[in-house]
Amino acid sequence: MAALGWLTPRRRSATARSVLAGEASAEAARKSSQEVEETPGTEPESQFPVLGDDKAAAFFDLDNTVMQGAALFHFGRGLYKRKFFETRELAKFAWQQAWFRLAGVEDPEHMQEARDSALSIVKGHRVAELQSIGEEIYDEYMAERIWPGTRALAQAHLDAGQKVWLVTAAPVEIAQVIARRLGLTGALGTVAESVDGVYTGKLVGEPLHGPAKAEAVRALAAAEGLDLSRCAAYSDSHNDIPMLSLVGHPYAINPDTKLRKHARQLDWRLRDYRTGRKAAKVGIPAAAGVGAVAGGTAAAIALHKRRR
Image (cartoon, rainbow, N blue to C red; front, side, top):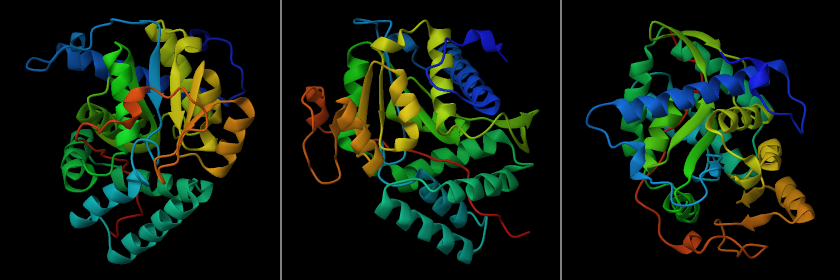
């Protein structure tokens, strides 16, 4: 794990666990990206030639920014189909998903419960097993839930020669499945501890949420030699204000009430794909209006306990 000195000065305080989670996520993301480049039979990262600003990159939140609703619920459907837990647990999680879609915000208590349940579920399972399941569920439930406008924004960055990263509280292994399927550079996600390819039931740091996302972006930018003032970040949630404030080009996508208010106060760019409302500020790349490449998103392993 990199030393804390690897990070640049912070505009916003973060706990030691947030820093640890961010650094672990950045390290896992870079390792995965390098492995993809070196694996025989895969296309090298050079398929996205650096034609523009090689000091810039884009960072995208996942839930309600790149995809409609919470990715956890859709992954939960897949695990339920595979007998990971009982019907009443799926019903409870469905209620949380319905609340999320209506409120458009994340509930800290739901997230805590999901985290604890996730660790219980994955303990003793192999990392490769969850990766394989993520690939299957991506195809089964999530391929049609991507916001075309957000996907087009990501593609615009890729077409400009910039790297594009997902930044999500989903486990990093699953987040990498999502990024690969969408044709993105890679993903920053929550790092669950594993030994010899088997989950221990512990996290490295904390879930990649709120300040931890900003720490992950900061750490990755330092390692990649990026200039954050030339980077862009996209999110729907006020919980991601630390990440959005870190870059020179913050975008509020399908924003919740608090983020919309904050974005307007700071003259950030907005885009809402839920109702067709136009951006509150001109300047969104033209590609935002074109259709997205077919794709979808796999999701987190955070679900309610399987009955033993």
